[in-house]
Length: 335
Ligand code: P6P
Image (tube, rainbow, N blue to C red; front, side, top):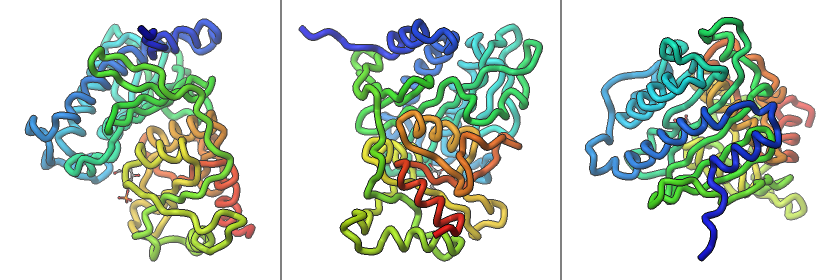
């Protein structure tokens, strides 16, 4: 009889013991992972439960809201508001900061995308929940936007849950990146991918080529470069694009290469591309750097950007260190 292996809570408590400055994250993660299991259950039976499709509403992003989006947002925000560990939250689905329940204010903030890639729900493609945790920095019990608008480099924990052929949690507390697979028969996340390291250079690029005519010239030059034939630099790269950030990043984390959502001219309201800094780019950038990779907006590290707003968008180039270094040189016009 084999041992069960390391559960996520054992991993978090062990890390906390070794690194007391990590604080009491086990409380935050315990509640967050409980609702992740519920979302996993609902995603896996969505086709039967009549919660596929649209609500008929449009969110702060101007995107149509899927019923599962709304479900995931509600269950996460309500559970975490009463956890006693979180003082304020930001959600992709909600315009303004979400306060903790009165008397339940804690020492952490939580920014999350409740169900990223939700346009793929109805076609059974992998989707995911993304989360980013900071320590509260303002005085007093109540949290505020100031507590949420911290640079990604001050995150104390970040990760995602990807709902696919299996449900996986990938997270970091600043001491490496670790993957856990959910055993639904016992409701436990078991360590399956310890110390994930991203290859220094890959041979896959991941971008929505349909936006090519809206890209800036340096973006076009970089993508054209990846498609040229040069065996010495493993070109042409292969194109893989799922259209679900969590799934595209998960592949990039494990196999290397580059995922990008460049700035473009497609939508005057979104000159910096589509992805959001606080609950998409910054948590993924934290994981990428912890795994030996990089994340840039084309000019600077994503983790050094001081957020100006909860739903601020940024261009994103993320993946293997050598690939991001090269992409940055093209985007800056240095090559
Ligand atoms: P496009 C999903 O809606 C999402 O926010 C990310 O998960 C994904 O990377 C991106 O949008 C896909 O956008 O414009 O290529 O369909």
